[in-house]
Amino acid sequence: MKCISCGAEYDNMEIIYTCKECDSLLEVLCHAEVSRDIFACRKSTMWKYKEFMPVDHSHIVSLEEGGTPFCHCPQLGDELGIDLYVKVEGSNPTGSFKDRGMSVGITKALELGVSTVGCASTGNTSASLAAYAARAGLRCIVLLPAGKVALGKLAQAMFHGAEVVSVRGNFDEALETITALALKGELYLLNSVNPFRLEGQKSIGFEIVDDLGWKSPDRIVLPVGNAGNISAIWKGIREFHEAGFISDLPRMTGIQAEGAAPIARAVAKGRDDIVPVENPETIATAIRIGAPVSAKKALRAIYESDGMAETVADEEILSAQKLLARTEGIGVEPASAASIAGLIKIVDAGKIDKGEQIVCVVTGHLLKDPNTAINACTKPVEVDADVGALSRIINPA
Ligand SMILES: *Cc1c(COP(=O)(O)O)cnc(C)c1O
Ligand SMILES: [Zn+2]
Image (tube, rainbow, N blue to C red; front, side, top):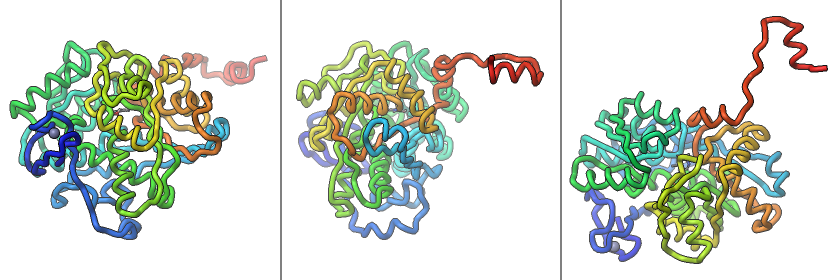
């Protein structure tokens, strides 16, 4: 592992989350000498690219995550004047991309010989960690901000047997608390500050360029919360570029909710650090984060790739969520729809070239947050079991 700021290096078997010299973020160094042809005949999971997964391959903990749908979206794409693909991460085993990170993270936990894992979560991290910890036979502690977790995610974390603790406070405070516990050695922390999480999530980047026939799209658009995922995808794309598998690179475009947008605000000012948002607020609970841990890596990804960042209002998120569901049949949770909302906003502002090939990563499944979905619709009409009555409702005079 190497510090992204001072370059200090650490052994991969050391349990450490930030640099001991300067407290900055770590990244796992990964380099593989292989030909891309070896991937062709393998099963379509993220472990298809196992040479790029720097963990012990003898006891991989997997639920066959990755290999998610890569849907061409001509209806919505034509409306926007672009060539649009949507990477549907809700199709992972627990319904979000977090599974990719947890597969590597829990495999690493076994390699390290720990018995307890934990995380703070806005929901999906806890749902995923609970499932993978169960599969590995590890004790799992999760901290959730009280009253701010979507119903589906809470159900998953509890049902898979995690010890769920509700914190009076927001996500940032929950993360600070459990990080302190992890530093005392009481559990192995699997938030995205753990660089092995990002090693799994970089496979989203691998799959995008593989799905496009070993080509990079012009742009990758995704929601940004704690900012691990945008950093991970960029790392993956760079690794495939360095390996010679692709010759071009995409522009990384991060979308944040207006009430929780420290990274977009930093980009707007051209800064390479953030000012944390004290009380982050948005209906997109998965990105309701004021002090993104991986901000430094995310800003680097955006600047290095000549990308951009944008903010969207909750109403824009909800209408994009409905638009994607009704024009393309893809159901996603609010945070995921932020990528679509942001894309629409930058297209409308003329910040994107006509005809660009764009991949939107939609991060989690619609059913994660059933309450928001139901509240966005009108109630079903109730009718007697009678043909005439039904007919009058379907074809009103
Ligand atoms: C975790 C999550 C995000 C945010 O990802 P970061 O890596 O924290 O930026 C976005 N959408 C969904 C559905 C998530 O679960
Ligand atoms: Zn350092």
